[in-house]
Every structure is written in structure tokens, then in C-alpha cells.
Length: 291
Length: 246
Image 1 (cartoon, rainbow over the protein chains, first blue to last red):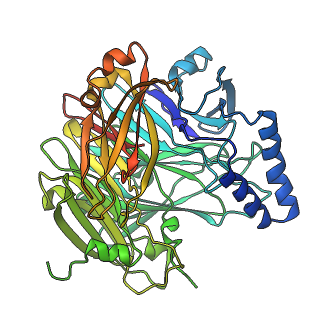
Image 2: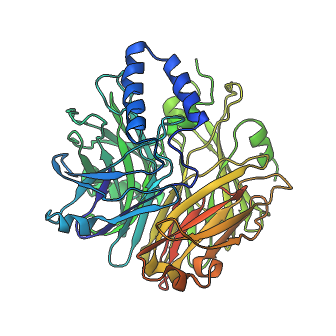
């Protein structure tokens, strides 16, 4: 799921790696190994759709794409399907604000769910390559790139997620720049119905911290808040002794969220300077043997 | 420098630093940002050391920085104060202070970010890229699209994340149409171990404008050995710099 911003050129791109194949020996091996770790019902639920779609596609190397467009509150607006399929080596590119105009959607902030006909079910169960979102306003280009999920997220049929912990040590609150966080309450279940209520801590260099509510994120929706939105203008004085710098630690129990870090000019979120997706810090600890 | 942790020791201990592009010059400065996430996820072992190594474009050591990070410790390091006018590679390891046991065959990678400040208040961000490798490794093809209207401003940054003495990176670049057709191909300049290069698209492919024609977008592909995942960039005449990992 990717955000778009009203009045900003928002371009989605995806380049299919030349090495991409829908099935290879490594993939088959991982399917079998994965099945051995699950119970019979889960195997059927995971494998049947996968094998069915492989057969239906004729094991084609080409990929198809469609876009579901949602409001920032997670309400469904419309679906667009790319007329062509794309072979390994090719790139898919679309300017989303043009598309919204063609689809007669009013100018607004949206969320776009990009669905590709096939992912990689081995390894981290993701897309083969990264999606690229390019935002161009009058004189700034901000881009972030990340893989798509090819695995269940926030689905009731599975064991619940432990929770989300997002860390952003790039926080700035100065007269020129104010950092924002955008959290997306995503799910692979179209009937997903749980609202997220994250809590935000802002920590400065001496360990002093402020705690605030991030606000509610509706199911399949997204919310962007700046540190000024959460902590008020007092945040400028709070961070001033540390050059306007700090770290946010955002937590939400029982669900997983997608997280973006945005740097904006201090103009009430009108100008986007930079954007990057966060990385799950706990993954860095997976090599450590913990009791 | 006494007490300095050598980068090869960090790799040997199973804590390979992760690399990012470093740029400090008259247009861009780099800030390295990190948080001691051990204090969030390992309550019984919350203290860590941050070790940062700097290399110039030729891979020569250009500086070292160490800071102890306690509970909720954080770092927003203006690298231009430590190594002004050095562009190349930065590599960082966060290592817990208390000895930890590693899972057999596993490494502990480090997560951090850089923000690049350029003129007119521009900022661009990246999370860390690949861990430093003690041995050569293959780089599979990385492809990304670019906007043709910014062709003259566009380029790529390539970082060699292999520290082996014989670990120079070699590779090829291809200019591609969005339908996947190859418009041009050439051998990349060698990058020394831990070095980095920044190359404009029109330096790689001087004839790119004619080859791309009227298409709105084009793509660049890079593959070879010892090249961490590349960064695309746009650098505008007014000094705004915008960098993004592939």
C-alpha cells in the first residue's frame, strides 16, 4: 500500500528483474519445506491457491498488475487493471494523479494497493524487486522504494502479530523542518476491520521523553502526523538543546503496521522534502540467541 | 587511535557493519542517525557500542567514530564535522556491550539511516544497505526506472561493500527502455574495496537522450561483483540533491 498526496505528482514504478521465474527448483524446494512446518489445513490454504494460480497462468513468466484505490480512511474507491502483462526485464510505470483524473476521482490524498499476479513465496515472501514511489512537487523529488508483501498480514485466521515497534532516529523539529510519521493499517484480508491506536514516544539525547497518542488508524487506512501534531509547539523547545533532533518509538500491540518517515518543511505538511520506509529493527537481532 | 575497533574484527565477531553512501562536499552533507534498539528488544542487555568507519571514494580509511549508547541512546552524527570534504562509504555496527551468543552461522546486522542535506533546505533519506563482506560476492541485476525529463540531472551511486584486499568491484551497466529493450551496455569502472563512485547517466551513456527518445521513463541496470544495491540520484542545478536506494 502506497500513499499519494493531493497536488503532488505521484508516480509508481516497478522493474521486473530479468532473473524472475514463477517456478524454479529453489522455489519448489521452499514450498515443500514450508509445508512440512505447517499443519494440514494451513498447507491446503496456502498451497492450493498458489498451485491453482500457477496452473491458471500457464506458468507464464509475465506478470499482471492492478491497483485498488482507497481513501486515507480505508474506504474503497475503485480498481484499475493494467491492460498489458509485463515480461521479466520490463518496467511498469504509472503517474497516479493522471490516473485519478481519468477515473474521475476528486483531487485528494489516497492509498493505493498494488496487486501483482504473483510474488516470491520463498524467502521473505515478497515481490521480486522493489516498488518505487516518486513524488515530484514544484521543485522537490522525494522517492522511496520497498518490496511488496506476498504473505498474510493482520489476518484473523493466523496467529496474531505480537505487535509493531517503529523507531525513527531522524526526527527533526526546527523552524525550517518538521518530521512526520505515516502509519498504514494494512491487511491481506479485504474484510479486515480492526482500528489501530498506536502510542508515540519522543526521546531526546539526554533520555528525557514525551508520550502522546498517535491517533486512530482505520482498517486499511493510513494516518500521517507530525511531531507538532502530537506534541504541540512545545516540541521545538523540547528538542532545541539537541539541535532539534530526536527519536520516536511508536508501538501498537497485536497488529503489524507499515511505517513511513517523512521530512517536511515547517509549513503544516504542504511540502515533502524526503520520505523513506522504516525497517523492522528486531530483524537485526535475529542472529542473537536469546533466552 | 587507541581502543579503536578494527572493521575486520567487527566482521569476524559476527557484527558486520552495514554500508551507506557518504557525501560531504560544498553541496551535500551526511548525517548518520541511529537508536540503541537493543535497549527496546533486549531488556537484560540494553547497552551497546556504536562503531562507525569512514572511507573515501578510493576505499582508503578516512575516519572512525565510537560512542557508547545506553538505554534509549541515540546518535545524530554530522559526519561533515568528522570528515569534511570526504565522499565515499560509511559503515556502522551496533554491538551489545555484554557478550551475546550468536545463532550458529548467523550474523547480527545493523539498522540505521542517513539523511543527506543539500542546498535550499533539501533532505533525502536512506536506510542502511548491505553488510560489509569479508569475501567477494556476486551482485544480481538491480534495475530501476528514472524520469527522462530529469535525464541530465540523473545518475547512480555504487558502493563496494567488500573489504577483501582483492575485492574490487567489477560489473556492467545497461541502459534499458521500459519495455526491457537494451539501449546500451558498458563495463563499469572498477571500485576499490569499501570505495564508492557517483556517475551521471550521461557520463555512462553520452548518447542516452537520443537512445531514450520521447519515452517518459528509462531504466538503468547494474550487475557484477561486490556492488551493494545501488542508489539512484537526481542533482539539480540549484544544488538540490535527491538520493534513493534501488
